[in-house]
Length: 340
Ligand SMILES: [Zn+2]
Ligand SMILES: [Zn+2]
Image 1 (cartoon, helix red, strand yellow):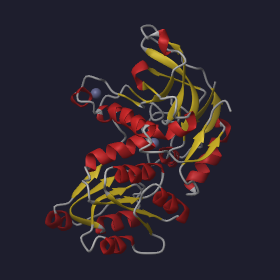
Image 2 (image 1 turned 60 degrees about the vertical axis):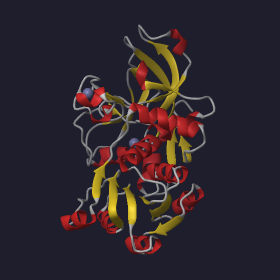
Image 3 (image 1 turned 90 degrees about the horizontal axis):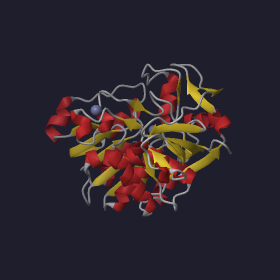
Image 4 (image 1 turned 90 degrees about the vertical axis):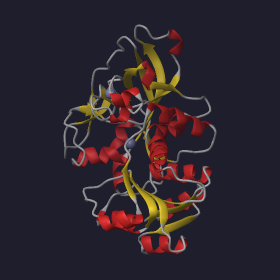
């Protein structure tokens, strides 16, 4: 089958012919219908994220149809439409035992990271990692649920914004659009910050109350103004550059929670006196739990959150999707559709 593979930091991804892995006991073989292009792939390519495993097939926002099952998996699951949960923890450690599989120190697999992912015609995963997808959510629209929406759900779980609080979504990409919609649905007041008028317009359409264009005005100052000087209760940092981190932390109010979702090569600097006197929290949020994925699928099925697709590309055109993402051109996701 065809697969797009990572060969180590700084090296280009390559479209290759590889062997398909047949399902072993407890596994399912999924024919991939749609695979979202995430910023993480750019971090792999640049070398910023280096997990030391290569070659490996990229892609962790994966939707498809079960084509075959391994021993012990019900044949009823053949033909089922599924979305992949990309972590496979040891299922025994203290983190796995409470469902925090994304924090497992002994991951058995992480599809699209250290294990072969969905930039391919097929993916093979344990049956429990193939989560049923409702018929009303089409393949391409479903793909970004796998990381974009789940990451938003997880970050919101950690930040715990309360009704009436001011939340800033700094960065309006795949995760940012999810966060804006979750905020709207939970009665939170939302300010979207970005540098692209098109993406900010989309954020407003999805329920952000105010959009701030960081290329035209000082974001923190504007957020202070909007919140009557108090600052934001929650800032989701989905960008992670020196400039965005500075503005995000300057925009944070008393008992504010700064939640890091995105990152870049830049480091975060803040004087502790700010955290001390305002009792602020700095939180990191990575990936999601299996339960977050079930939650995310439910949110999309109920229409609470919708995914935004910029374009659909055949697998062979993965590079044009990555380039567009890198240039900041995409409003929403680029989704690869193998077999199209
Ligand atoms: Zn991702
Ligand atoms: Zn574990």
